[in-house]
Length: 189
Length: 228
Image 1 (spheres, helix red, strand yellow):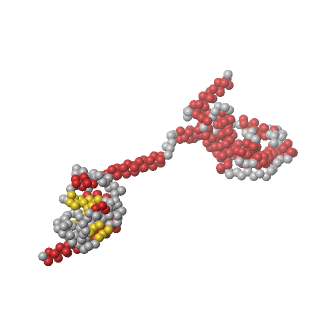
Image 2 (cartoon, rainbow over the protein chains, first blue to last red):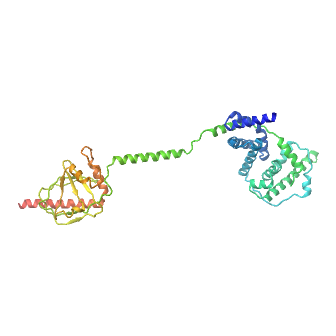
Image 3 (cartoon, each protein chain N blue to C red):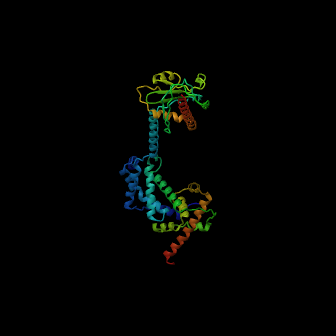
């Protein structure tokens, strides 16, 4: 019953927000902005720039709120807008070029990443920040957002092979960074 | 490539993470939403262009209604002006004004005037009736081609008629507007309209010849008087 009530409240809020009710819009913003800023922070290093992108994305959310058909999750809909806005920002301002070099991680190297490590959120942010923008984008889309290589290739207008090679590069760099972190924790560095 | 444990861990931790935005963030978003919700004036330049076109259209309509212009389909008649003035020609005292403000006053005697025989063929393009309005008299020089045969040789026929007679004779033949006694007609305007329909070259040549012939007639009178 509680879930149904929450769902009804959300629908009413969405309806009011689509009618440019500022109070409803602020309610939606308050509920989802912390998570959305975290998503933007995954793609953009600078927190201020990440916030600017988040605000721009929320503008698009409220402008296109009437197009939301209540078929899926509202949070998932906002998240998709947020990710697309981040990708657009990076492509415009960073001018990333994806190079297909057919790089593939070896089996031994892959297995090294298959060990669960105790990593804090700061460690994870450090790992993400260590990646170049292109590798980071594909890593986020594949590993965190759950897109397939085919979908990533379509979104970024690249080859599927390029997406795979970029992800391999990202994984290799992550592996190197994790080993650095472990050495630092162990006091060997 | 399957997701390994490290990547799963990264995914779970990042999905659970929340970063609180700054206090100014909502104010900025609020301001952007306020601006976006204002009704935009779409295509104001279209309204400006439409109003300008409407104004031009109204001005042209008003201008056309105020101007009385002769019909464009009238034809300038083939006129043959015989310069031989006989003793039977009539006198008129017209005051002809043109666009160039040339005033040619002709004081012809009631008797016929002999001029050197020469014919001036006015290039026939369209027939036309030229109204010369002076203060006291109205002289109409009919230059219709059908009157050419009726002209006596070596004669300039100038008819002295009233306005009413002119309208009665001309109405069924032309499509020019009716000139009513009660309507004030500006002579200069009418003449300017007439002049605009005649080629400058033709008009100037005709006036030059008329003035030349007048001088000749004048000298002939003087000589005759002296002889008498």
